[in-house]
Image 1 (cartoon, helix red, strand yellow):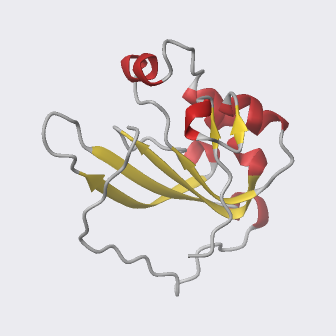
Image 2 (cartoon, one colour):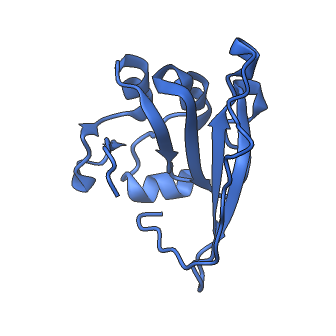
Length: 145
């Protein structure tokens, strides 16, 4: 797969391209993306464990400004415990949901795919009928959750 990847994380141990607060990155960067994967700690307990008690900021705050770094028709993939995602209020439409079972004591992870709906701005249909999303049964392992 030929993918240009740019990783943002406050934890230097995961060797991100930008080490720091995700909100500050989104607020300051001039970069634009076709796809963004949001994989925040899902609760305060998890944030304390993963980031050694450091404040990880507000997920809602990041979602409110994320569109400034997205190209038209961009997709957001959110990993978490719910399907709230970016939502229609931010001009996003849900197109796929995946449930990942980790077995044992760990809660399932919900993967949500949304696409930015630019029709409110342009009047064009960004979702041609030939776009088909296929989901097949598979096993997935997601680390650092």
